[in-house]
Image (tube, rainbow, N blue to C red; front, side, top):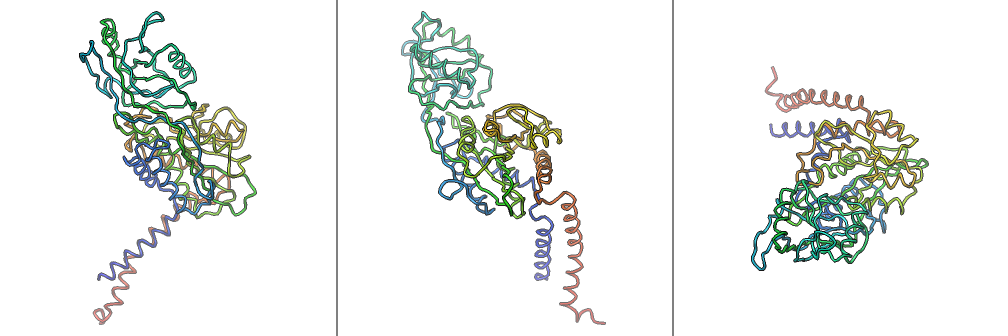
Length: 458
């Protein structure tokens, strides 16, 4: 009897493998997102150990799929450098009356560090700077300092006046982590804190009383060596230009309080989606080379994709790139196509045919391609509610939306002549599987009767 059960189980596995070989499975995407958002990856900050682990994970998947490496020294890794903000040490914000501690504010509730502009770490003890005639060391701002060159220049101007730190009052939640995109090396900058706007009057009152403010920040911008992960699935004939599928592997890491920013939607989802497309296509013969890329340091200003486009290891002239960034939002948000500008090419025509929502922005890894006049779009569920917060977890992913996104990619691949299992073929495979399953008990009964034929002799 045990032998019969073993035989039945083996047959079921065999027939299932026939029916579902290489079919797109959104649950695989979900599972990969869950993997890449574990604490051991520490928010996948470029140049950090957690990011290295994530790169190793993708590298392993490329090896398993038998892609040909397009990185340095016949590896999948294309190395480059980037300036990335880290936190090293303690953070504090205190108020003193002379040497007497008046108040110590709570990190993550009352304040947190800011990385934008010319942000630095360090220690400062002084009074508030109220106007040009005052001698304070700490500037007060009422608008959140978004990451622009003007923010950087303003910080440098303040530093030139002897300002050591800046407090910015905002209603922005304290579980949000700002990005750093100024790829400049600078010696002078500002210690910058985000302060809950409810504390504005209190801090002003402390300043009017002549109290001293003490700030310690652990922010340290480093020049790090990081990498893209690049592999190619070679076509039977490579006469046509390649197709590129990409997604950025990095996120914003962790903050000074040790809180990890998992980056499930942004952008473990895009990487997981790309890897499942690889799984579908790995055993399929194609009429074009297909390049798979996990870009790095996107959060620092698309550094990895700029590097690739300017130093491509393979000819990408006339290529088409579809980048994946934030796939699977649980909100009722349509799948959108980001591009830097209106273009007249086959990829844009396809996007229009699919009635995808069009957004003309340059804030994802399609932008460097567009700047080089290479056709590229980013597919995105443009849900910004939990992005760069501690709430961007696996619960921020909807499997059904992932499947809907693949339907678009499937149509694209079929139009380009990729030999992908068509929907009707998938349905036939499922029906075949059901027939096999129905036959298993009959087959098992026949085996059982054959083994025990003496019992059934009349």
